[in-house]
Length: 485
Length: 96
Image (cartoon, rainbow over all chains, first blue to last red; front, side, top):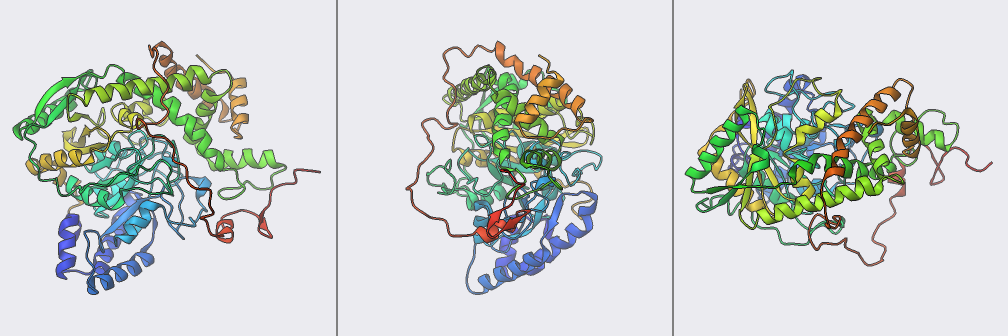
């Protein structure tokens, strides 16, 4: 069963000639054709291109090339520009948009020999926590098709959970990798702000957006992060620091690792969630880690802070969609203002319009100081508290989400309730910190995730801790019912 | 804090968004609840804290040399436009 193998195992099999990349790609394409109609995780299939690229990977290998991702299939979140392939961002606005170049993340994975199978469904412009705001319809959770997979990278998460690809890319602005990873039993990492290039990744909130990875284990995520991390002159916020070897330190023992348990995360935690977290703490202690309580008193301000900063940045980023140069244009505009207003009114869905208007409001004359400036102060306060915490501990441990996957339709009409799904994940985005979600058990038969947050550029430590946890536990190996066959 | 229909009409105009009659009451309600939610920030004591300028301490936006690095791709880019003519984007007449 090729789809049950890790990236490392697949690379070994390709290297030994047990399977070709072309046959591996055929295997996953057949799974997508069979299983995706019930999930709606993949919205663009690039079968012909994938088979051609797999043949190239096989020829490269025959000519002596090697590499951990050479010939390995993947699915890209449809927020990443892919040269010559529709890049919709889950929106009617970009339903007709064919990207004219590759995002840096796409180019780097292509250079590493990874083969794109298609593009994953997502919340429109990455705005949502349930993948219900997509123009292409909701994604269904492989664990229970009446439940959401989380969002905004819901298609990527569901695709990896359903084993439609060994890994997928995602983006995380307020939890959009970690929350769907938790709700689908996958492992997801959001790197430090600036660690992975945002060039060619359609912008939502530029001071928060970061690209990352969905995989079935921390070890697989380390392989992929290695390929996409690094400085890019095309992204002015990309950080020019050397990329460590993420795989080399996976085996390091956790003896003496100082884990901080965030008091504000524990307050009001639902009983099932608290029990899973306590069990995870016990595993880490058995591995030699030390735990202590850490308080971040301003953390409860995270969600309101985010819902000022993110909409403000989105309102200016999405002003580029004007119906002129690309994207949806309304029929028969009577003048330029009508063209702008109707193209945008028709092209954007309800949640995107709501966030653009929220952002426009908080930035408008008379309100800027009260909302935007105040939020940026709160954001600095939260960041300062994280920094102080990391003087005492090496990583922070907490839940990823308040609850397991919820029913499709349950929260979509109440934006503030929906926003509170990200209560545990938003802090890391506000402070630019790396964070990882890994499966840690079940509540009501559905997977839950634990979250590890580290100081800036401590991806190595997060991956090491999660890998050691996964050597000691089996949660990450469990497939959604029916998807291991 | 609750927003009126007039507030939402003004915001929608500033954001260049056509909002239908049917959508309007939904936005008045949901934007009011979002503004009420983020209003809890007003009670936060942020003291003398400086507003954040960059998520990574000490980092600033990098500048590059003012040199041409792009090649001419306008035909490829304009393939995505609704209306172009002679290499120019077409919009409704602006000057009578």
